[in-house]
Length: 279
Image (cartoon, rainbow, N blue to C red; front, side, top):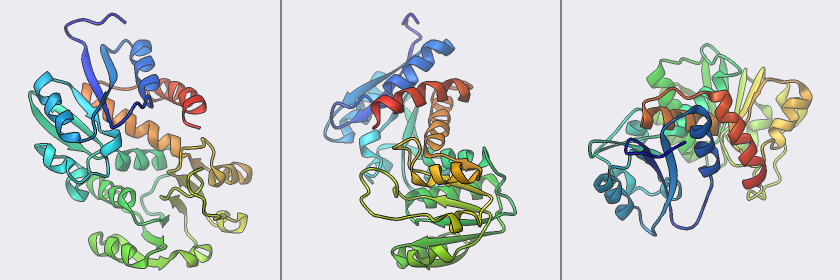
């Protein structure tokens, strides 16, 4: 691809050298003929990076190192979709100097789940009660998705109760120790259990998983964490964590660039990069 005066620049904001995503989106742009590049910008704080985005006309940004930083909400002009409900920003679109913040994980997880099972009318059991869960529930509200029931299991019951108070679609909340007793149609692990940095020894038993017709995971390192390998072995339909990453990336690029993204082609580069660069 030849760069020219019409090439759109998307920034990856980070505090240190970090190439994650660069070898996913740039090869995709090349293969799909999209006139855009994805480049790393580093700074200890997000403020100067956001000001540069306005001043330089950068089309959009993924503030990878700052997603949990509450300051991001004040650095954009408005919030859209699930971001407005949960006040969390994971990517930004710049339209003539106006910055709009979006929360991509909600859309990514919702689309990943829907790639294997319809949620409407189903009994959904969720492990976790953090930002991703709040975003997912907000996304379902926005999309008019109505499960039959949603039950949350979380280590800190107070956090789950707070989510229940915020979202009327949550029917019940329980402490995590009661999860093995849960039954339903769809099970979603919205925690980092199964990731190499989580040293917790938590096991999803076959007896537990076989109560569900589909499972989903947000853990994408490794590509097939324990929950997913068990689902594969038991032949239960599943949505891997990398699928969530795929669909949230698709959402971000389509929004920032006003294009349609080929999910299958993007998945090719994503899986290749994950296998070598995210272990």
